[in-house]
Image 1 (cartoon, rainbow, N blue to C red):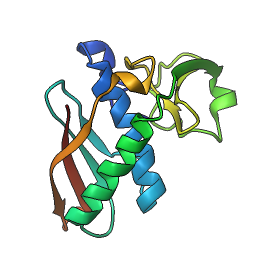
Image 2 (tube, rainbow, N blue to C red; image 1 turned 90 degrees about the horizontal axis):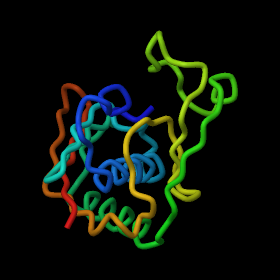
Image 3 (cartoon, rainbow, N blue to C red; image 1 turned 45 degrees about the vertical axis):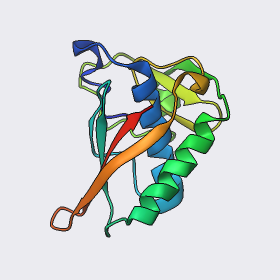
Length: 154
């Protein structure tokens, strides 16, 4: 599930940055086979995402991610939502991170046919509203096997 699901109601989100998080997560899964971000801090000016991965990614990898994310953004994909029951979501999504008092229904956010995940956050209606994705910096914590990217939208 998207990492901002549980704190989305506590702050005003910036929909372009939050939608970008979805695109980056799917890009990381597609390119490196890792899961969605294990930690996220999404803000208007800059954001960061941490991924569990067994090796440090290089500057070339960062450019590859940047290019792939921007290619998705340029496709002008519609961002839509769907409400389904937890029973329908089982097997399609990881429900382990839902709070104990979660309702019987869950909200799925879809970025075209590129990504779908459980999320209650705010999103753009179309990726054309996002702008240019830029990785500002990245680092690797070998002890924790975590690669962190810091990024902004221009």
